[in-house]
Length: 422
Image (cartoon, rainbow, N blue to C red; front, side, top):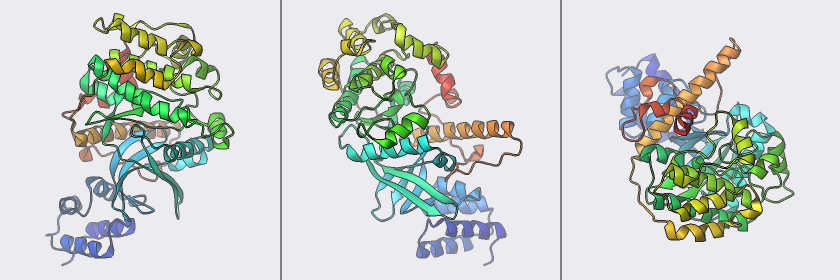
């Protein structure tokens, strides 16, 4: 049976993508040939329903994109999230059938020495550390094709939500639950510090909370493997966001990012506990400059004033962790664990992970659209971005979000923080 040119083109892209083995591709082609000349979108839908493709893969092929759906032995299945250093995908290792989180560095970022150095540092730290509360890295790789190298890192796949997302879901955490989340993060930091690593970017977005209540710490991109590490120096000198994050940075890290010790992480973890208890950042100012100066000179409103049911003991722990002078803080992450343990309780947090993924995809699409619009505004002749994998921006391919966050929370994460801080 003859099929349309559009269907033929779609099948050619599918073959080029490398997603299917030859036998599976032939079976898929037979399935398509048996259809009564449907629109190519309907054909793609059938291949998704029959298990040949994921929804994300079908969307990419419908947009004419096939590059990057296979990265070395990893088959990209769907978007897991979007971070400062690129897209993260759920992928399957075709050699082992294991599911992993695959972080891919955007094409334009591979030419940025600092970003590439930070990307490698995160992978190296994740491969060095083995702890139940730290996201593992399995492999740092570079795939080559006619378009150039694609840098990637395969990591442990964590089916969880970050603490910022969790706060959007819950609106307000039980006090003992907030203490448990931060206590687990402190356990991870105690191990990392013993291994000679300072995280330097502790914040809610870097704490993943799983359905069983387990917390996983991620993103060691500003951690130093050893004090003479050249990659770390490159990331510090040339990297973006080299200081950490303005809402959670310690005073000494603002002054000198390079020479801080583990107590800088304790300050940032204290700021994160502040957020988990109150839903507000310690210094809710509009600009990063104002926030950074406040970390140096101002004291935040005590958590017990913002939430009167917080016991004074816990308020004292937060204040101690956030002392301006490192020598006045709790001195080790193990000490933080010991102080928080009497106040901590583990909770299961059932959530629909599919809806979480849809929410992230929708937010990432909007973020991508804004980036492309800004680029076009700066240069009317700008070409579309050529990331290794560019998610669909067609609203018809975006799922509605019903159970996780309000629709307006998907519009702009910066605006979300502004509203929550005000």
